[in-house]
Length: 608
Image (cartoon, rainbow, N blue to C red; front, side):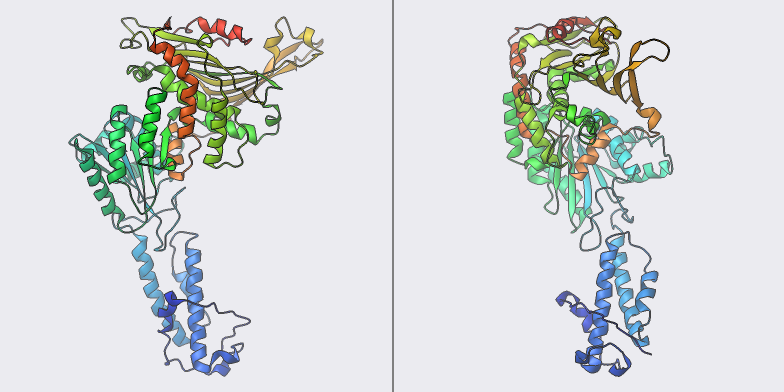
């Protein structure tokens, strides 16, 4: 038998592979002359032995590289290729080594805790030296609360069901109640649902997810509780690389203590730790500053994810896509062409009113985070990349450029309670449930362009949209054909999230027929007609961003401070009882004050 090595370069090996060399013994008796292409400097049989061992090591190393690009697969195909055309005794040696390699692979292929084979995931398929990616533990602190049961656990299951969580993920519910694992599983099972557009193996997936969910009673001492949580996580993680996410779904008054104890007792040192914090982020500028200072004494900024579920809507994510990937829009995105921008968020769901009972009101709950973040994404300069920090850098510039609110440019309202209404029953007379304002950004791009905000609770219908109104055409040749109010015929870009998700462009168009009659028509992209897919819940979107480390939709500390600076004047007026909210009927159109406010700034009111 002869074996040719045409211009084969045998790679060098280090001490980590030297164990293979020792297994090449003098029992291999082959004449060097029977192998064409072997270097004369190979040293006869010994050199040939080293050549075979080098080839073997090279093949194994190539296999390991190939292995990282796909799941662990059948080894027979590889063994067949590796053994092809090798001398018989060398084949036997290779088979012996291959068996040990195969057992080593199987040793790392099955997770000892979950007894399942890890699958490819969206964000956690980076494998470590042992052939297995870092483990992921997710702890929901406040697991028995309404938010955890209604939103967080269902979102986690949706991600798991859709393949965006690794098979070996482990989820912990943590609270003070005396429950068992089965109690928690029963508590959340009724809230889990599978995608409408793909229901395969729904029951099996749900059972598998529940088996990965565990409960830990933290008691009333968070120091002890977090130490217990850490011990349980370490038991699962073993000695491998490990990542952890902590979702702090707890009342504001308990947040700092929980976060501090977590930082001291439950963080892993074998990977990253990410902390999710629910809004509101403080009560005012001073309390927010103190809260941020306390958090940053325990965590790095990059670990903190201040979540606002309203920012997880597809409308918000699509803002940057629409702006920066369409040539037709970006050149028009300035005061030169845009006359005003309106941001509308009205709610009619009575179940939402509980947010306002604690005295935070609509300003601290919606305006401070969602509305101002939407304006920042709309108005920011193009970032240098899509990296989260680059986008946040541009957002904070916008927030710092927004003029502090003048109380004369703000309208506050409050739902008028009736005996049959849930709305307003527990509201004190200073808690606003309606907010309208005119904001201005003092920079070169947006100087003089009013940003009109209208957001409220208990209005006539649920409506979420952004309306970008363009200037009139200078010297319009068709002015006399546009009717009495030329403002009704201006171009407008409408981004709608509710009641239906859509993108609309209002244009002027000739009505077919004889004569010349113009009509304001809409080019309409209705998502439900165009895309046959179920829209994920906003918590799914944001939780996946946390797993991926994408923080562009989460407020950084400097953004937080800049937002409070904008709202401080009006909050001070409320605290001093210098302003009284205007009452409005539940299910109505809200206060009448915004009509006059819009007119003051030359903007036509968009009626509901």
